[in-house]
Amino acid sequence: MREVDAADRARLRQAIEVSRQAVDHGNHPFGAVLCDAAGELVLVAENVVNTSADVTAHAETALVRLASVRLRGTDLSAYTMYASCEPCAMCAGAIYWAGIGRVVFALSEHRLREITGAHPANPTLALPCRTVFAGGQRPTEVHGPLLDDEAAAAHHGFWSAPA
Image (tube, rainbow, N blue to C red; front, side, top):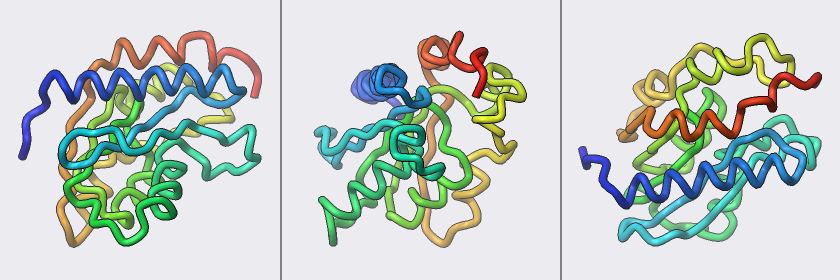
């Protein structure tokens, strides 16, 4: 298992910035970036649930869809997805099926639930991504939560508004 380093934290901060941009574009505060084995930025995606009218358009699933088209046939096992928040069960499933080998996330699903409360636009599942990945037949390395206070800042005030 590769340890988290300064480059990982920098990429995670990029994902957090993308989450802020998602809010600016009228969406929920979630962002994700994908880097290749050398650490080079390959793709960026933000949550587009509201603007696409697609409840499955979380940042991570949007990134997987983009990767499926733009990186068709590429072995993603040495790639890392950086996510502003822990991937939900749906997103973890998409990451697994895409074959992405490493996930680094900022805000935990548990802390997100504390922030969002019972907001109808985010009925958080109490199912850690590690649990989803553990059910698979290939390994997915997971690191997080990291930089959770920085990631939480994008959510403060957002979930207090009506859905």
